Image (cartoon, rainbow over all chains, first blue to last red; front, side):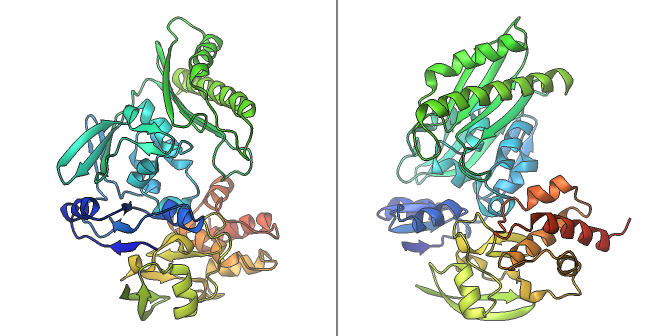
Length: 271
Length: 154
């Protein structure tokens, strides 16, 4: 395995990250250990964030919640706005969620992860820290390509800010898998809708998680479903694999979006 | 690199030299001798390697041992039939081959510590990451409900 470094502060962590050759941040470590076992992770150094104080804080104010990178996925089930909480609740299983981290989940950048779908809809902001300071990256600009994020070399996720969710809007997170209940999804959708707009975050149906909106002013529920499916159609670009071919995943994406919109519609009207 | 860590396993302190890349699973099996902690899938999906750290479930197959310096760990060796969960599993015939049962027992203890009266749905959800190849899920669910009843009778 790569050499493990255990910094005692965030400054030390980012210094290590920029100074070492081929270094990677070690967050919760669940994904990293799986990728090591699969033989597809190549890093020479790990910078462990577990020893850095202050990265497990959750701070709420009237605009939203700011979450440290080492906060567990499990804690987000209760700490995040409802749509995001639902998406976090669908990650892996409760035991893995105890260890897996919010920052690592984002930096992993996998197109099939659940939380990004909701964070896209809620317009969350990723805080990226390097030796040069901290910058803000809207999550809608964070996922740049297959397994690629907007993080620069030497940068780490130092937090994520999730704005409050409009309490009068309806919401739903829907996830469909083809192999097993706990397998990667074939299609997932986080949906938030008010009277005028439906916001949709899509997972697993394109090389990156995707965000789209559709105008639903004056439409009934079937009209909103049709508008949502028409809006996602151009961004569907599924990767065929053992979980299904491209056409299957395309169809499942439409079904997933329809289910999520209908459930969100009911949630808005009936709470 | 080798680091010395101190872990309390089932109430007993162990001073261990561990490699930086050593997994908690291997350290517990090979250095501590708690072989109820088992490897199944190796990727956190089956629950056979479950341990409790400070009461919180962890997949030891994905956990670096050095991170558990100072931790208080519970494995199935720390429990006996005076434990409500263990005795309920026995009484409900929840074990067939038994390979997965230590993991199920520990997950159930975590659940009951968080939620004294879980619904059947909550039991299923909390155990969703544990696999029993013998398929004794109905008996396992019954055992968890029975343990809840024993701990806090209605």
